[in-house]
Image (cartoon, rainbow, N blue to C red):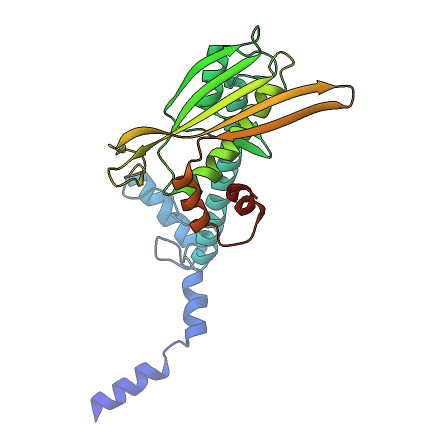
Length: 265
């Protein structure tokens, strides 16, 4: 009975949750809620070297009741700073890339063409990249001719090779043909072919190169003709034998114009 009375007495004097939170909000790391006593205690501890007057959260929040706000503020600040770094990095990378990429409209040489194939050329709203395996056969403003060969190791089939290399050839050719001294651009595309006649592509993010024989697959010939009416750009595609045309027909599932072109109609 005495034990029950003691428990009742303790419970009667217990603080409610709100009262407990209000009490601990006034307590600093010295364990005192009285400001004057806490100040003397901090000074005493600092003098003895036992504890420095440092609050790990905030001088205005010794109990840590605002720790959620602190965490949220820190997380938001981190995200904002990270996004700012990404944007600045992209802008800087764009400036560096443009500064290091040759402008073929101003100068066409073996060196500038190789630089453009290595770093890409401006096309649309960005850069068009080319296969990392390439060679330059000719790049001469005196003859007005540019001829290069690339080896596609990223395409899985004939349609991917045809579509991807077509965009690359157009971007490269137009950049060259905007040079007043260039009127012909030849863009050869090679692929690695397996023994059963399938296109091979790189694996493990490009680290493992195909081992099949390198085969000439398609060639784009762009020409420029100037007249009183303006400038005309013409494209002639060679290298599409019957087997490649058949594979392209199988991959293209619509009645779009390329089907009629490749059928000879």
